[in-house]
Amino acid sequence: MAGVLIIGAGGVGQVVVHKCAQARDVFSDICLASRNIEKCDRIAAQLKRPIRTAQVDAEKSAELIPLIESFKPDVVVNVALPYQDLAIMNACLKTGVDYLDTANYEPRDEARFSYLWQWAYHERFRDKGIMALLGSGFDPGVTNVFTAWALKHHFSEIDELDIIDCNAGDHGQPFATNFNPEINIREVSARGRYYEKGVWKETDPLSETMEFDFPEGIGKRKLYLLFHEELESLIKHIPSIKRARFWMTFSDNYLKHLEVLKNVGMTRIDPVRFNGQDIIPLQFLKALLPDPGSLGPLTKGKTCIGCLIKGNKDGQPKTLYIYNICDHRASYEEVGSQAVSYTTGVPAMIGAMLMVTGVWRGKGVFNMEEMDPDPFMEKLNIYGLPWQVKII
Ligand code: NDP
Image (cartoon, rainbow, N blue to C red):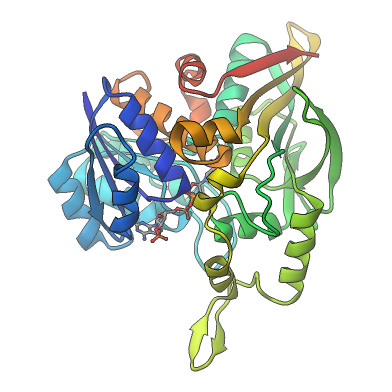
């Protein structure tokens, strides 16, 4: 029986809380804390069992450390924003509590995605005897575990990895993002980057495309190459990989709006002086756009996220596609959130569950592919994200 402190009452936080509350035999005590306690209380009111709620600015150690000390969780699940990662890791180090997140640290003033800042905590976590599990969402997260599982059971060596993320859902809004708009737009507007034969190659934003025929009625969709953080950890931990790329679908409508917003300067992350005060255009844009949490009742269709893996088994060439299909409507009916939040929140709960039950243990800072994939894969099937494998 374990206590979990969940930080961040957004779209993903809502799913993590629901899923932890369902796993009553593991998570005996749940606290949801966020900048705005009303959001925590709204989520708490949806549950069949009582949880605690708290107001916290996770970037203020004077607020976060006393909260951790008073609640005494076994693990802190960070589903606030990537900006808070290091502050929450610092508080975990100070209080001796395990840490989990779903997105790597980003500095506010630079759209740069790298694990280097968090990997630098490894020795301090190890010396304190605690564990940090990084990127326990879907991508990163399940995609790392899919790759590790494929290596364990199907390949002698992996040569090529394409992570393919399709959101075939429709929310009916002219322009909205499925997770935090600021983080989403920073990620999509950044230059593309992929790994090939030992070097990183850069591309102009959204300039590389391919088509992929998705299963289960989704059909052919156009994909755009992006940099995504799991590429950085996977090529480190699975060094046989010679090429690693990440692809995502976008609707023409999304891309049309994004282009205009970029051209007029609304996606800038540097301060602009307006009416006597500094504003960050992208943060102002976030305030205008629909809250991703509000898209749940509006979104129909499916997501399909998976890995296309090429390599060899005992010298014979092999290609494998492993994926999950998640239905937006079914996610909403279960936990009140659309599938992008659901596919992130369920793996966060599973990662926390494996940590607090002692199945995934380690001292230091770890990425998902460093752990045994089998118990995680088993729990995906149990907790709402069943997967399929095709040998091609
Ligand atoms: P939201 O913006 O919906 O939620 C973030 C929540 O964190 C909000 O409730 C926000 O509070 C709260 N928050 C922000 N700053 C602080 C702070 N300083 N202290 C305490 N709480 C704070 O985002 P999502 O739920 O869509 O995303 C959550 C995380 O999940 C992000 O890091 C995102 O990158 C990650 N993600 C990972 C994916 C994966 O597959 N690995 C996929 C999708 C998302 P307030 O309400 O006051 O703004």
